[in-house]
Length: 242
Image (tube, rainbow, N blue to C red; front, side, top):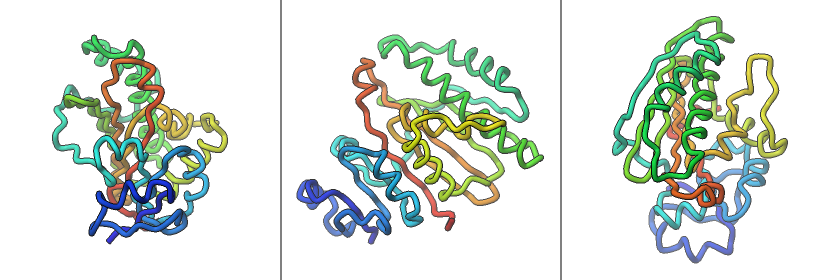
């Protein structure tokens, strides 16, 4: 039975939903497998990033909407298009993404959504390419844009599997503390600062030394105001032990 850490103020609201499925503890950020936050994700990530038991960090606001504490199934998404990359420059990546996303119809959603999708896509692809350059072994990077009735799904897969949960949590905590991109000679890290501000759900599937899959879910908001007020949930689909 997985353990949940949550603020005492929301324990009563959680009791019925988690009965018999999870063990609820109060604010145990150092060891809980699922952490539910109500207000500030930033402080949660800073305080808990050394907890290697974490599998899910969930916004209470998101939980109230979908009742999911763990990573959602991605099986019900329909592919819009897919692309492969390997050693392209950031300009080449950006041009290809802009071309394909520019052909899509985003009428009815807030005006900036296409720009956000382009930026997230380019950042994730480019940084997967950078991993290949740093390892001196370029491998295929797979990109997919998918959707369902409620959200878009951006998915990027690299075949190195060099990212670890420890690394992800450290980068997320750094992004929360410094509130900016990480300056690197090879690029802006994995753009964690941007991801924390750009998506509703961020999902990492890490197959050590084989594959890393990063999935970004963005709800189909009609108004920019609603998009700006969202909270993010972060999920790991497996535990790499690091």
